[in-house]
Length: 125
Image 1: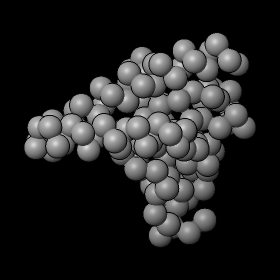
Image 2: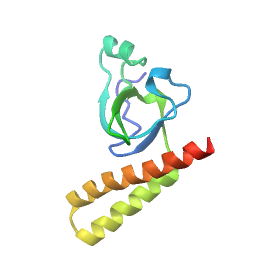
Image 3: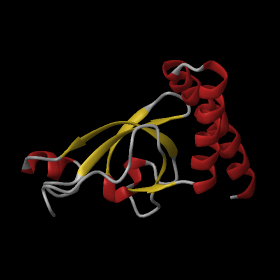
């Protein structure tokens, strides 16, 4: 792995744990990126089942629990949620003209949308 590689995911982005991830990472879970760290030593790489230079993300789930997961076990999910979230950010920013308030509103909107999507997925899966 290239130690200079940049992270794929960004703060607040919606991700899903890949189905191929180890069971303890809860494959299929959907959450939001709330932290990230680059792996720099072999012990970390072994702990997260990845390579030096890879990224590990803190993913927060709807209920407030979180997990640290290597980038290779995550994927963007779904593209429509990312679009809806961005649209709400723009709307909140235009209404309040306050960037800090729009960030807080975005977290609330994400949790609301995620809860609705989770219920929909439970009905169809």
